[in-house]
Image (cartoon, rainbow, N blue to C red):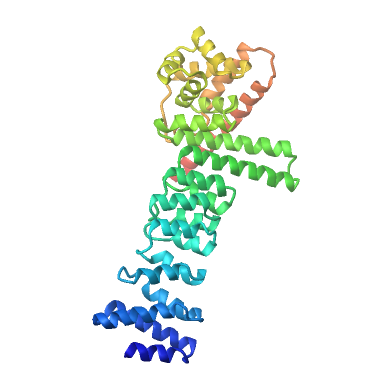
Length: 380
């Protein structure tokens, strides 16, 4: 009887009043001790209200039912397919929606719907993978910022490929604890390319010069990433660098001059098909012909062989040990001694490699000076 009177009343009531009454009806259904007959009548009334022409009414219904596991599933599903301003309420909160239903809804491509699904608590791995595959940039940003989302490394990599050119997503991904090192390096390379184009378009530097500067900055960042990566993560990083065309002799030499022999071991293993253990044994004695054969088999620049051999010899002679900087920055003592040996071995040659070694020596000196001043300031 009461429900019948309610349905008669809503036909003439104002939208705001209907919305308030709808909210009260839904709360009574969820929290009051109703008879079975009254519960059926209340559910029927709410079903009728799904057709109310005012979005205020349907929104009130969605707000009341969204978080309730006792809500009628048919009503929740209908509200999830309502206009985005109403659907997003239940999509973000309802425990009654299945993953298949949510995947189907995000596939429709509406930004507000995708954002709502990405904000759920929790977001299971399969749903996160679907969002990474088809979600817009906004939804992917919500997803990677959601601490309750199970975003697997593969999903993060997919987001990086699709939206890594956007600063907000790139910056959030770079601080994500589960981001694979190869994906992190790919984002650094994307940023490097973006900066090069930006500088060239504004004619701040010639395009060739801009690309060279950003390439060197990318190499420095890559060496730092390799230094921070656990041993088992170096091989995937090398594989990524090779497949993306970034595994150059200059990058390898920079890493070696920072003391990172392990990175060279994994690279030579990847390029030659030898096991890392076999490569490491050969590098223990770089003066032997076996190292030359390995170097040539890897296809590294022939003219740089002397610098690589000198670097390995210097590192072994110095009994190199790690410091607070890890293998992230150039070591001045290593670079200067390699430069001295290379100049002795190749007298009178002012080739590109010699110029690069001199530039790296200057860079190493500046890094050392910065570290020295920072220590003085900290002590003060």
